[in-house]
Length: 427
Figure 1 (tube, helix red, strand yellow):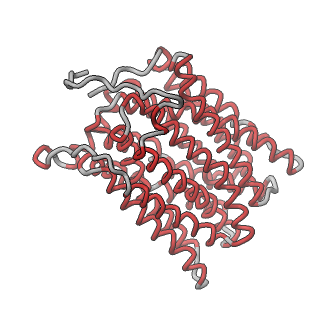
Figure 2: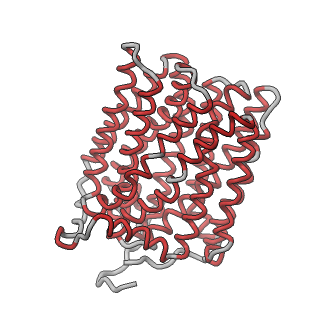
Figure 3: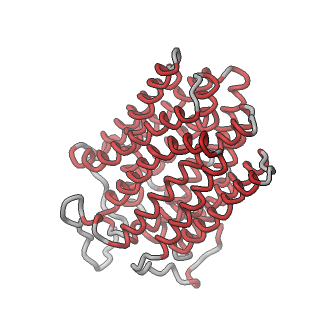
């Protein structure tokens, strides 16, 4: 690590640490909590629109899930270059504003009786592009808004909001869909993005300037830097291989979960929302435990142990069956405990990645990791939809759960298991 000439950042003191106090972090946190709630409503609303309004087939559900994640392949690395060349907060504001306008087209089209599956594909794809830009800038922005020593807490608090929104969002989506129709539910998400725009605009802490124009290289060369950094870091290589494997099989669920719950197990939209919300409740628990576990146990033990436990809990999903209440109970157990452990893993992995990456590369490294993780997602979603049509939905879900276990191997074969704590910050 190079000597930067400044003292290392110290964790903020006080109960729950100081991130409860700085107004700029609280603005970011508040806006993202509301926006994430709206996103979870749409996350359930788009598939429900396809299922209940347009009577989509399994293949169409797979295609819808695929176009939502396909943009990572197209613009992921470009977003990383932008996030390192430009200030990150304006990128986030622009992405939120455009996502709000895009989602508004769904209730407008439904009002005039013109909503069709092609529009859902288009909205999912364009919203996916904007989400890529937002997420890459967002993950790179956090370490500049809070000190590096507080990144773990910042990630935990933001994940806590996301998990809390997952508790409320899907259930609220189910209620809104049944009471007010799908387009009205999606309207709430559009409005939530506008709230996020306002909260980001109110942040006053100056953002460090990006690299001068004269120091920039060709965009393709800068894209390769992010991938090269991951390739040169053994820990990041292991995380990337694990994430890609789990993403491929996990996106079988993205294509089929709603169809499996509604058509195979007989759950209604509200019940489906409750089961998904159980995963959010588990995520809340995981967000609260992530920092405590890593402070009491070896970091490698936390990372590998949480991932193993999360994957084992996934077997409750294909085991679900029988009376609706029993099937629903199996889904809730799998979602709650699986998402709890997965959140512990995700917070520690993201914080470790940020500690291993200098500020000037955060955008490109985050984008590269997102590409390696989510780039296979469309393939997984399409494969899941096509397999379900050939071997059945339940058999495909079994395959998804079993395949995700393979994602543990890269960590077991790497230096991750030997980690006692996060390495020193790289500058």
